[in-house]
Image (cartoon, rainbow, N blue to C red; front, side):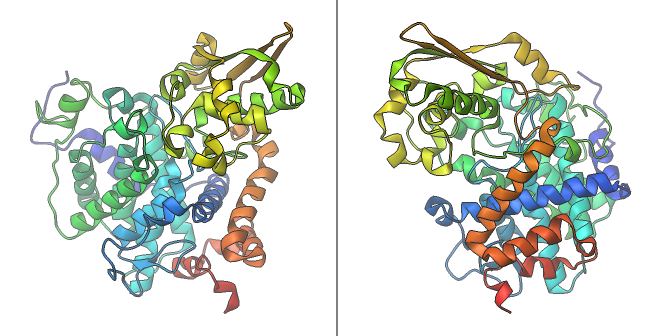
Length: 477
């Protein structure tokens, strides 16, 4: 265990605060990547509005507790204080498990932080406290991605039973405090209080407790980050040795005394290497397995009843997180089941959000296929998963037919991987267009796509003006 210094701020807090305060000169490549992340997160938000369970969790804490002229929630008419706006927007971005992903020792979804960023920026702009442009939103996005992603490279909070949304809270606290004009000390205070919260237990992601909380946990974390930022700007003191304090610090309580590590220096690495969920909403460790199953669907030509056995070879993380047998109690349980996702793809040649519904799960063929499946770790896939020069998320699906025929498909890199970005772009744009058209209409959907991805004027556009475009009916003005 490292030596504890009680009269100084934990070094990591200072490093994170310095990065947020001092780094501005990002490349056009990184800003373009941030634009794509913004577009994809908004598309996920619009699509989530079609889900009744998601809509039930939106709105004020109590009836009537809205804030006219406050921060807006994409695709809705809600206006809230920035804390509640962050919760609502975070629910939308994360609900369908369709937003971008980062896989490392700890995994997560950096676009969850956009909920805090948009909420703070829109609130500040509309209230007249500070005029912010969309370039500042993009820069905050890059920084939040970097903080969450680089901290995830070496620190496996999930193996301590903590949920990955801990890093959403930390990153959102830092960038929110900075957006709202906080100085270095205030950013450190916001960060330290975010760490002092500890983390949510992962219990709601695993049977028998899998449930909707896994879909709103990121919104909760983003909102908590905003709250810590607001409190810090109002003068709340921090906990300068929250990480390293003997016995009571985060590292002693949760990390067996091991210091938290930054896997690399902070720059713009994460936004340029982010993984997108392109064509189907499934937990990311299953993405290549679903691709394999879709290819096998066409080779089977409807002969799934003739399958004798299915073997799925995956990475250690995939085996640990989404290898599930037995009953699956709800959609939140099913969308984190490798066998269920593969079965749907084999049977239907597709995988959509509605395929996780209770009605879809009533198809008896799904469980018959699941009973024929065996899941095993492929050690090479696990090594390639951890290799920083590969960052592969491989799966192989092997089918043995009753007549002895063997069918095999393997995918090393998912469609959303940077190595396949050109191949994925048309499908990413289709994903956005389909979701946005349902909420904003086809014309506004196209206008928004062009603005976010191509228009030079986006950088100088006031945040309030941009957010107005996300309210249904904006194109009627």
